[in-house]
Image 1 (tube, protein in one colour):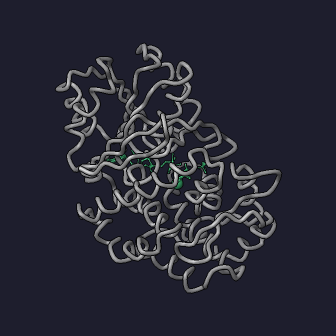
Image 2 (image 1 turned 90 degrees about the vertical axis):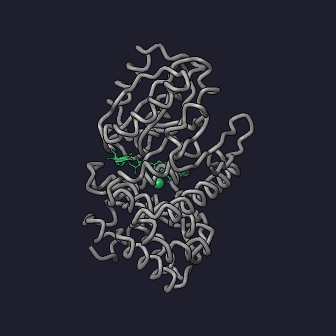
Length: 366
Ligand SMILES: NC(=O)c1ccc[n+]([C@@H]2O[C@H](COP(=O)([O-])OP(=O)(O)OC[C@H]3O[C@@H](n4cnc5c(N)ncnc54)[C@H](O)[C@@H]3O)[C@@H](O)[C@H]2O)c1
Ligand SMILES: O=C(O)C(=O)C[C@@H](O)[C@H](O)[C@H](O)COP(=O)(O)O
Ligand SMILES: [Zn+2]
């Protein structure tokens, strides 16, 4: 068992990683439940894992009710939030109770936000079942939904009480989803850990094939990297946490353009976005072109899109930049963009005009 602390003063919690953990979750959750029932909000695709979790809770004397929601990004919506809030209220959830989020980043973000606003805030627990959620979304307390205007535009910072990661839940995850989660793993290397990026280059094949050792190394290193950055800047105020947004200003624009319909997954959009961030950095003479080419080559080798064409996006630069105007890193009309001086040397650049980004995007192959 690996335990990684997320140090946030009164909001500190542990991320526990162990193969087979779901079957032992009840014992870890009993002190958090304090004799109260724990509602479980689960993605419809994780039915077998839901059964394992419920049996483990029952063995520890914890009553549970399951709320099963439709799979996919469409569930991060006002409509599903309303339905979920009504169900949780009907179950009589109290402020000191904890709701369990069992699923990928969609369930985690939605349940986290519901918990942030239910009776002005109740507790929640993350039990992530996708690679993306295990290495990224379950840790750090960013919660929320999408709106007509774009990605994650309504939400709250609300930290879980504990994160329980059972890597064996990934045995049932489709390969396309494993690849999408891998984009966020490679991201940590690209941000500030070139040695980890080199590890990724050498081990992505094993990880994508489900090798247990490669999987646990990738999860633990990713969680440790995220816990460190979140511990330094919980609410993305100092600029440190913004590093975790590498590839996301481009990526969220691509997701919005694709329409949240499953044709372009979040991790796929982030992969294309990271390749674009490096290509843009190289085009401005900030980053060696060899590093940009190395990033694109590795993403391609991992079966991920390395730019607009591979992401299936044909929109022009001006249209994509219009999506970026909603980015939460906009300040007084200026965007904070994540650029790179090289692999492992990402930084926040506040000096790039939206017109320059549009012009660069227009040079990219469709
Ligand atoms: N809060 C954060 O810090 C943060 C970080 C990164 C991403 N996100 C958000 O996370 C979301 C993407 O998360 P995701 O990639 O996990 O997508 P997801 O939650 O949609 O899950 C991907 C797919 O896998 C299925 N699934 C989940 N677990 C499974 C399992 N064990 N076996 C079989 N199928 C399974 C789901 O039904 C879904 O179809 C996006 O909305 C993104 O914005 C949030
Ligand atoms: O935790 C963070 O901080 C991140 O930026 C992680 C991202 O991978 C994630 O997609 C996050 O939801 C994006 O946040 P947003 O603030 O750009 O909506
Ligand atoms: Zn992301």
